[in-house]
Image 1 (cartoon, one colour):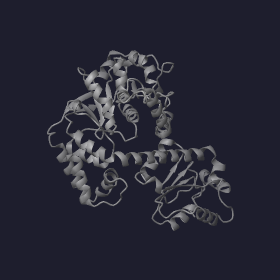
Image 2: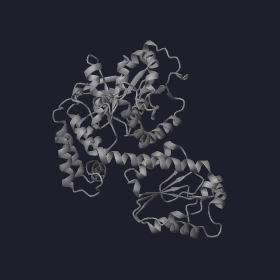
Image 3: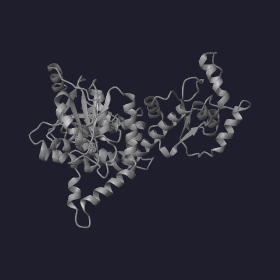
Image 4: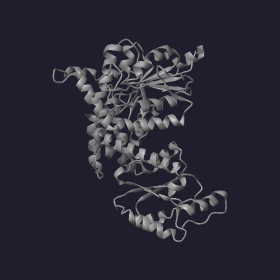
Length: 474
């Protein structure tokens, strides 16, 4: 049992709630019986306790699973402190940050949620909020794991390949200019007239998949976001250089793990660092300025994070449907349209192909995961992030002053990088040195092994160095 804290209102509240949450006669035995009834596997590496009340199940778990991480989520701070990591409250951002800190990198199949169900009857909705946040977080972690398993090695190869394209980077300053962020959802087409009217007074961030639809309407984004590592992402960028922006200056915000064409060589990059140690070490060694934007699994999420960093003003979202409209999956024109046209025929019409694709996207479930993330972001900043549409009345009239217009033009400064010819070699050497340093080697291996050796947990130092060298020199 926990030591009794000095009498206070909070402790009295905890005592009161304990009447409802635990046995009045032998709560320790009750906790032991409950844990035994769960038949928990020895393979579990982390337990997440949902409102464990006075925490009688904690010593039971510690005794049975001595090497397993145990963390707890409490509805409020009315309970005594436990000798395990604990988060108090139902604020989604706080809970997710707590989970990020303590379970990021653990396989979701080795994480077990343990509910203390009597707490549900007492705390009701707040208990369910904690459970929902945790379930959505684990679902997103699982989606990220599947993506890493498929694309991890390609991301590392892209990173070193894109170092060779990097000649000019962008330095930024925080501005007081409204921002429009565009995704490629079907509703973008209806928002284009509003975007065209407001573009001069707003900063326009476009995901690479939405840029073709904007360009076809004569709209040139202030910055295009490219963060997708899949080879198909090039289908969105090639036409921009080939057909639309041949005589225009384009700025790109890029994660260097993204798929980028060689035409980007002279394009200024605002480099996005995903916050990983291996990327940070290389950027530090090469003196490449970057902005930390953690991976969210979707380019539009990265665009929103970037907008929040760069501007203190309102942010308006267009084309972020995260849903299929009838059988339409994206705004038109779209980078994949020609793929359907090229294989169409009497027995495979374009309409049927689009219908099949819409079904796959509905059944895939990934859009639901991202929709949950966006819903959380919108709830945290209800007075600053808005949806932009043809019938939307919240887009306030905005007439920029001369100073505001000038601030939009001057928010980025191009920095010419020196000695870029050997970026790959120097970056690789910095990683090899860090892998030999006990301060960094453990964390570096935890990041790099899942990327280069999906499904494997034990890799020799020589194997890891060989894989890194192959990725850098390919």
